[in-house]
Length: 360
Image (cartoon, rainbow, N blue to C red; front, top):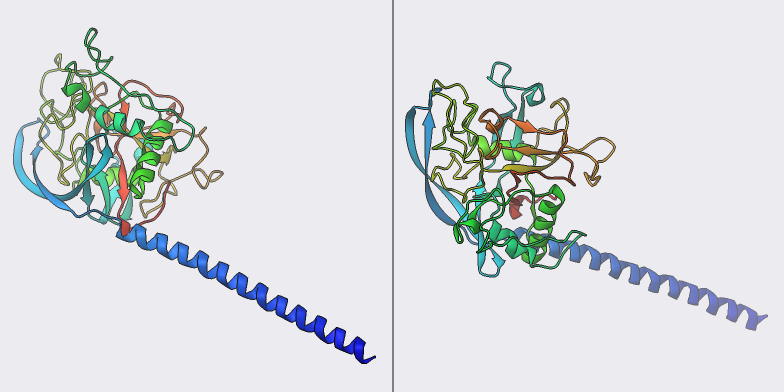
């Protein structure tokens, strides 16, 4: 009997010891996971290069395209190393609030640009220029992340630049790349994120319009209209101007920043050159739109991962009218992530590490 009790006692102690060991192991695993998350968060929060400053010039015109104000400004930025000796300038966009969409009396307005609503955004970084052929080629050489192969684009010494590009053996590589699928633009961001350890992605619609307006409430960040001197668009189609309609369509992607005129945040070509992909899925109105700058996805696709839903393009391109280049103008419908047309390109944003929030 004593022997039986002794064995039972040993078994009970063994079970207790085993429970303690399991508890300790679980505690170690939990602490390790928390530490890993904390370390990742710490790395993300501190993974921001030192900032530099650049100066820029911006202009404002009246409804006839007449210059009424010229200003100089400065902005903070850093240069991201893409590899192959190629860099990309990322401008710090200050946080703030703005009214998204267009008023009902704005000329050329479409119902999809309303209702107007106030959006509050934290600071973020945005490409000073649209992604160029040179930058695209550099990132295309990086290992793929998802499933898409990115093809480099080269100048042909015999036949010249590919269709829709400025035909110059050197300046061609500084043109905004276009005829780009949304999926390829996302792959570009994914590869760049993995290379740098920073969170690159396409801008949300709210981020894009906020950055484009740069504190203005007029149809364009340059004022009441745009002119061929301010932007690369199909100027055969005028906007609120007494200028005669003429043959003023370059109708090709030009080297970024060719006008030399930035908007109030120091960003170039936010109107025209190439239409720019956004992260959001397309909806026909802003009814129910978020007010914090986050991407807007369909109710049945909360993470925005379904590639059958149309995305949004902003800013107009070299082959679109001035009206399509307005700050509030939206291009959706027929804009599937798996298709592209001439004049469709993109620029990227990077979340401010101090306020990082994954939106992709």
